[in-house]
Image (cartoon, rainbow, N blue to C red):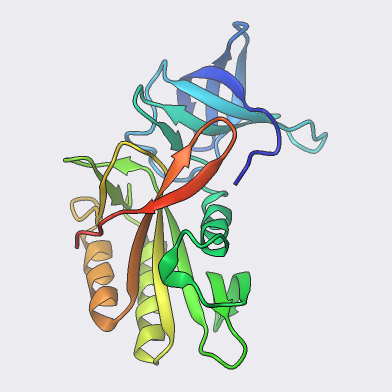
Length: 232
């Protein structure tokens, strides 16, 4: 996923009210940027870290800047949670996610019952595959990416739905998009949300596919590049 325009350099001063961050630009100007991330953003920022921002000259927008990437000294971290579905779709379509090939149609935000699944893969005359996508940014011990970064009742619901699909004989997968490069495996964050970890293992045991793919990040694009071991 390439950024639509050149990103702007700065350093983060503080994050507050969930959706706001004060950023000092290279020219010394301090601006407030929109932060499209409802999570805790643990291990994703500290005062003084380098950041990259996008600028949007839209008269309807109150905040012209959006926080896209932070840097901890080792890696860029993709904190914009509105992007992972697009990153995942591109990774499926370009063949990076090898487990999810063989489908001719990809539909985002597919409705199933009263809910929506992030991606529906289909092939004429074949059974479909439903894919739920999660953005992973939390750094755990031993270079392991973990999810979630806070108790996620919504995430638990998604896992229950995925398991229900599999038990009905429908193919379903959970795709964790790991948006940092300083990790080499993925696990559920049991110490943060034990129910989520329990439900993820139940989904796996039922036959759901649990996949984790790592992104390569820079100022021009975010792209899925390689599969990570999933340790349940």
